[in-house]
Each structure stands twice: as structure tokens, then as C-alpha cells.
Image (cartoon, rainbow, N blue to C red; front, side):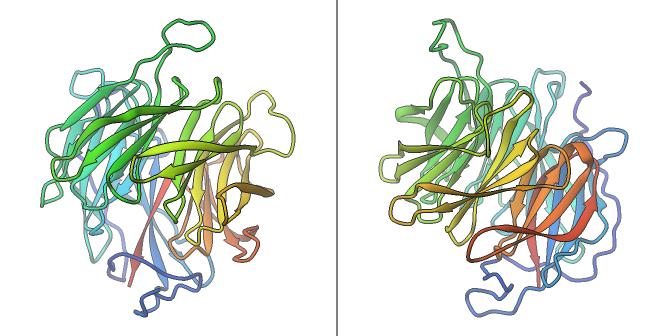
Length: 396
């Protein structure tokens, strides 16, 4: 695979309204703190690059209608399959999902400055991800650390963020390792995601190959990770934990299992950084079939619903959350009107869900029923080659 570009060429685009800060809004788009109503969101789209995709794309979501504007290139960079926005909304970070970065068997992480007036991205710098095939990253709540998971390398790494948004040299790196519970032989690790908890004190890394949720203590000031005690929580053998999400209450957490097409719910002890399994529920209306797998999991901003994507079945599984104990109840499986919903995202107001159909090159917009959590197609669809990830920033 080609070495990740050390220059990201930003293509000019026309975006007429300036960018705002953070967004804490209700389903109508009204700022929850009583501020000005938000009418539009900038939508940044991570892709796999190839003949029809050049990197990160930018669209605008109309919160009144659910319509997306035509996508334009925000920055040319190799396979930015997952994105993360800095809390200040001034910077963006992207993995480069490759296996050869600067002549080393590793991927890359890019830092970009976001132009407040246009939404354009300008490359600040890049660092190695420490392992091959980085596929997920996140920024901590203080904006001082980027954490990245390497699928191919089976590892995680942390990188400090400077005041200028640039990435420093890696602060910590952990190579995952373990034993296959069935054979007793070494297992092949695959770091698939890493998420910071609501207290900003712990990070949970889902390793698909080890069937483990590895927990690290996070020191935001130094961006350093250290293994927690206990260092991991095991999930059932063969589940293949992929993506992970904390409930808005901070009391529960959920992991979507790629191989068994299921979601496992946990009680979360934020004082100790520990997880206790309380339920596993299928994402499908029937048994798992050949070619089926899951991908993304998202908790609705209200905390009332959880959503997961089914590849092969090509649907979004909708669950309601039992407020008393955090367990899930199946609501529906909604077809995504495309193939291979690799990722999806719910806008910060909680009104719309955007499903990224990787294999059919489309993003489809669904409206969320705020009472039942059910999805209704808006009829709006955006064509983008190999869409994998979506992130939002408010346009004030």
C-alpha cells in the first residue's frame, strides 16, 4: 500500500456561513442553553480513497429538511477512514488507514486546521499511528490527547495535541497480545476502536481479535495511557467486539459484536473504570447468515435509544434503553437503502441519522422519531465514494 501523503491538498469550496462552536441542542435545532437556533450542520465525511475518492469531503445538512448539499473535497489525504473533531471545533484529526507510513509498517494520523469561515481543512502535521491499519481515533474532552486504534497492528497509541493543534510525538503505545480461549494458541489482536469515558479518566479499547475490552487510565495533561487494574473485560469467545459507546448517563456502556451480530450491554463503574456485563441481544430479526457482520454503535443524545449497523443485512438495528438498568429492547431493523452500512452518525440535535453505505457510495438521511426511536427515510441521499465516517460541526 502506498505511503500516506505528507501533504494534504485542500480543494477550494463555497460555504457561505461561518462556523459556530459546540452544539448542545434539542431535536428542533434550538440550542439547549437558550442560544441561537442552529439551522445547519457542516458534515465532514471520511472515505477510503481510490479512483473516485480523494480524501475528506464536506457537505451541509439542513436541519429543517434533512437535505444534504453536494459533497466537495475538504482535503486530499490517503484513506482518512475515521475522523475526530477537537472540542474547540478549530481542529480535526484523521487516521490514514494504511500499512506503510514513512517506510515503516504503520499507518498515520493527520492534524488539520478548520477554517472558521469556509470549513476548509489545512494540514498541520502528521505522525505515525504506531501500527498498521489504524481504523479509529478519538480526542479527549480537554483537547490535549488523540487516541488511536490500529486494526492491522493490533495496538493502541496516544499522541499529545499542542496549543496550535499539531500532534506531538507519541506519548504511549501498547501492543495487544493474548491467547485463543478455544485453542490455547496466541490470538491475533485487532484493535478496532478506542473511546474515552465521560469522566475523561479512562479509555476503553475494543480488540476484535482478542475478544477483550481493554481499559486504560488516561492522563490528559501528558496524553499518556497506562493499563487499568483489571486491564480488560472479556466478552464471549467469538463475539468480535468492534465499536463501543458510553450511555449519556455514564452508568452504562455498549459494544457491538462484529462476528455474532449482537450488542452487549454493561454496567460501568466510573470510579474504577470497570465493566460488568448485564445483557447480550441480537441486532437481527433472524439468525446470523453468511456474509453478515456489524459495524457501528451509537447512543442517541437523549439516552433513550441505541442504534447499531448490520452489514449484509444492510440495516440499522434500533433499540430502546430501559432507564432503570440500561438494558436494551429491540424496536426495529430499518433497511439503509444501500449496501454495507459501515458507519452511521446521529446529528447532535438527535433529529437525523445519516447512514454511510460504503459499498453503494451513498449517505442516506433518516429522521428519528423522538418517542419510539424508529427511523423514517427523508428521501434525501448524497453520493460519495466509499463513505466510512461522518462528523458534525454547527454552522451558526
